[in-house]
Image 1 (cartoon, rainbow, N blue to C red):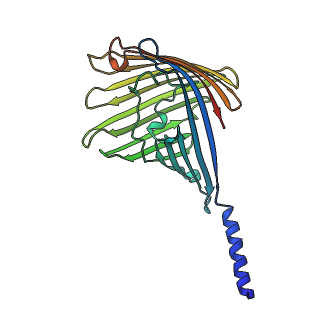
Image 2: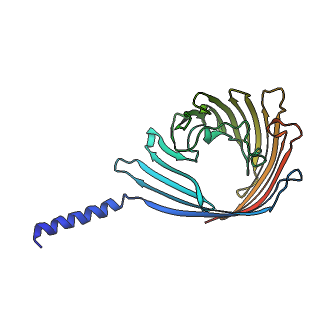
Length: 303
């Protein structure tokens, strides 16, 4: 082997070693959760015990210009759950490509009320009435922060049309206070779009966080207006408790208001979390006398 060949191979090997330092890394994390759930006497509970398993792959790397690329893929019970690819451009913001994950736009802020567990309307019925949200499958998102404001936007192309949203969040108006406002459109057919909007305020002082959120969904048929309030207490660095209420007005004379309330508590010890949730909804979907309850006790492990 001549001298020039040796020099060339040495330079190539050195470049490959240097490049590998910027290739980034991948990691795997997992979770396991055992849950006892009761749907109350008004519904057949069936087998009350369940076990859910999750596994997440994530990775990141730095580009030559200083930007950072990250990606993640999550499976729940061996089935696809969510994925994302994000490009962090520093002061210029972060660009996301999201599939069933809420990293930007209205879906990220659909309910920001403080809770130690689940939202008060969650799991009591199949429909999340009055909760804003736009199409989350294969959507683009963008977030940028400057001068105490965060702008979070989303765009998705659906089979029946497009959906889009933008949210503005202010965190620096005063210590402990966050306020936000967001609007969006979600296509329900090739010619019909629902208008979504939400605004909220949260204030944290010491161990307590209180919040109020008002949301509206303007539909071609009956509109839905929702008011949610909640308070959470960080009892110590391991334990939190919360209480919340939510009321949905369907703006239809034949429908009653849907009223939800709930209590949650959680205790974390290392990689183990104990949680308890008790939610109740009266007049589900506006149907008088259709009341639902949901109680859960769970223990989760993170690996």
